[in-house]
Image (cartoon, rainbow, N blue to C red; front, side, top):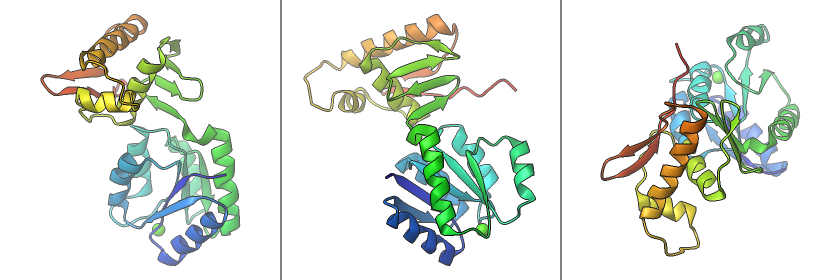
Length: 227
Ligand code: CA
């Protein structure tokens, strides 16, 4: 099994130990020690799994987990130093995929990482605002309804959804969608976006999730669940 695993742990010795074990098991581990660094890192580098310590300097694991779940379904394993904390965490429905209690054996952690990745299919499904984008099947559903997207529309939507709130110009989107540098007019993107919006509108009238930014390009804006 392979994959980029982000280890968020402020005890340096422990972080190094985990890093070594994960590397030996074939993973590509990265370590962060400060809570404030995690969300920007995840947005930028999108790991395949996150081991997230609960007590961290800067920002605690609870807030980080909630924040990540607003834009990504990357598998998260929460790590806590107190066994009695796990019940409380479960009750909070943070969207973490598993919980591990300290002290643990690094071997056990590696086994859990593998189990979670197997169960979640390596995090290749994106969830946001009622949208589920299943990459292996190229299937997109919104609130349970199939959007029946073409492969190009799927890729376009997937890219925007994976980078919520960021504005992309037509050229940037074309580079993503047509990496073989096929010559296409930049109006092609507009036409794909138009079709995407129409399909979204058909399934969920008023679901305004792809926004045009006049003169610049497009962005995806996650819809917050009703308060
Ligand atoms: Ca800690």
